[in-house]
Length: 155
Image (cartoon, rainbow, N blue to C red; front, side, top):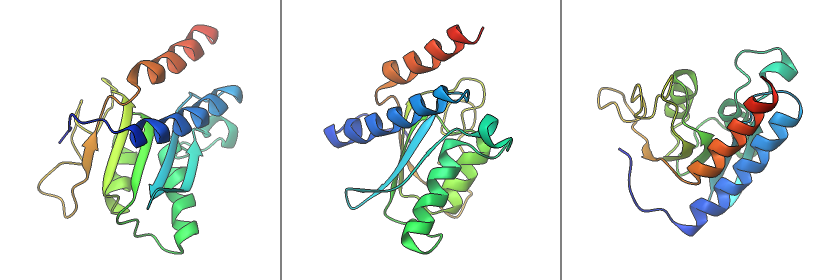
């Protein structure tokens, strides 16, 4: 369900997610960042913290969804948009679907484990109760640049 129109606000919020990604890289985690937005306001943010926490589920998307749920006082994030610098993996796509996120905007595609259309399409699977509108490729060059710089430094 990837759409082609990129809106200026998508770039603005993706830049906030990119800041989270850079912060993840500063503490040794793969630099992926995410923000959840509803009604034009950030209600949750997260960055990869798997290394920092020693937790395999501490992906940027999950931490941002948890923060948004705390902000709203409930798990249903209907009407919210998730911005993430890398296409969600299957675990994160499942959480996005379960949280009832309305739209997901990602930067770089993930050709190895992407679950928003690259390898799998959990977010658009018509067999599931909730489908999520997906926009990929927003600030993809910048998102890939942060990832490449991190891996170049850590090799």
